[in-house]
Amino acid sequence: MIIPTFLKWAGGKRRLISQIDPHLPKKINRYFEPFLGGGAMFFYIKQKYSPKYCMISDINKDLIETYKTIRDNPKELIKKLKYFKKNNSEEFYYQVRKKFNAKKFKGIRKSAAFIYLNKTCFNGLYRVNSQGEFNVPCGKYKNPEIFNEKTILLASKLLKEVKIKCCDYELIKDRVRKNDFVYLDPCYDPLKKTSFANYTPTRFSDEDNYRLADFVLILKKKKAKILFSNNITKNVKRLYPKKDFDRIIVYCSRSINCNSQERGLISEFLIKNYKEEKCHIS
Ligand SMILES: C[S@@+](CC[C@H](N)C(=O)[O-])C[C@H]1O[C@@H](n2cnc3c(N)ncnc32)[C@H](O)[C@@H]1O
Image 1: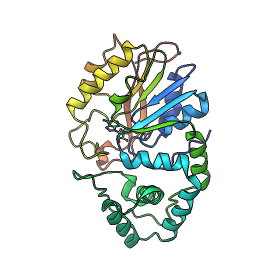
Image 2 (image 1 turned 180 degrees about the vertical axis):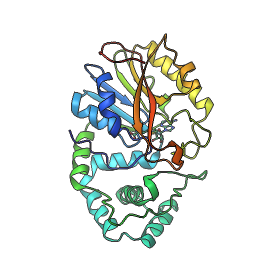
Image 3 (image 1 turned 90 degrees about the vertical axis):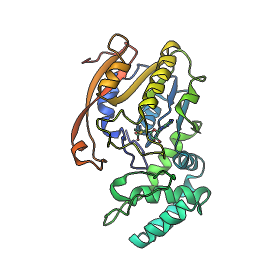
Image 4 (image 1 turned 120 degrees about the vertical axis):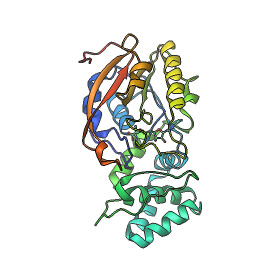
């Protein structure tokens, strides 16, 4: 199966899918993914299960606008991306970054600039400062791919009929019903205070983790099926106790991380509240 992710995103799940797959429900009729990021899980689930209803969302406005552009105007987007690719250079990168932060790009051009910056920036690391400005330096790539026409067209096809929203994750709670499947991939509870979490101008704090645990509890009470990725920390163990959740350990390599100690093979939790699959539980 081709997973048409068109962005590099910290925490991307593409390489974890084979370990997550055995823990997915047998059937998925309605799918929610409120921390969408690069969207690898969505593209996998859409192709494997063809859910009747999908709602994907993220709080990052530029990211969500880009998903909508891919869904609605893929061919125009490809034309604009060709322009960015043709002109790629270090000098051009900084011109585009300045214009992007000054909000000079609109509509489809803005989405093309977003993809261009994401694919040519240092380490493929989407990061903003406290003013919400994209502040990543230019990467050292000889010939970056930037985009692949087939990937964009396939992503567009899979996004048709999908609800795409820019919102806080909590806003989905009224839409979720019994047996709906919700995959949660939030900014992780940090292993260290310096761990990466700057997808948005404000970091994911301890209070955010408690708010998220309350949200998970609401979904659990509604009898939705919840699958949830996070770091193995004391906080996470306490918030999602074994008596209420299955906690599976999976292994991932974290290549996008400014802290070299957090690169390499790392174990993390896959937490779930449903029992129908055969799986190895920690
Ligand atoms: C770990 S990343 C998700 C990675 C993603 N699953 C992937 O495969 O690339 C976390 C995402 O949560 C989003 N996010 C952070 N706070 C949020 C909030 N309060 N509500 C919704 N999304 C949020 C970030 O913008 C980021 O895209």
